[in-house]
Image 1 (cartoon, rainbow, N blue to C red):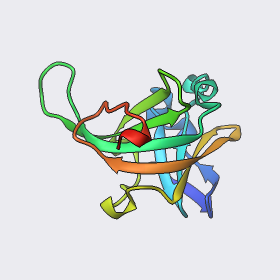
Image 2: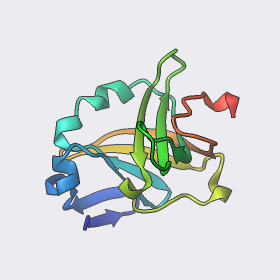
Image 3: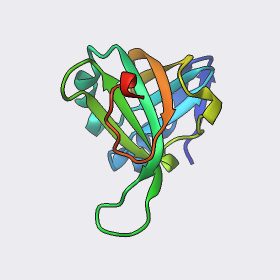
Length: 143
């Protein structure tokens, strides 16, 4: 079980960094006080560079189609919108998040932050939408 100690939007401490999901390279999204805090494991730290330069993070929720048959999973897509042809995105199963945003949060009013074991690495305005399928990879203006 992942435990997190918060101080408002800040992440004070967590056992995530040494957890099995982190050791396996899985990111985790924790929500508190109007912030989605993306916990990036040690092995994935290079993705922080891909996030730089984004003007916002678009969080899309929808069914993630399986690669080889099976049932679609509820998932989140985080898209670091930088107005490029190929913005950085991250797809996570809903189980990689400690809370789900309700439908009435569509639009925004929150921030997304990125954290490593070394602390806060980035902060962006967040936008939320529900979509028909993940991956969605569409800019906000297309919503």
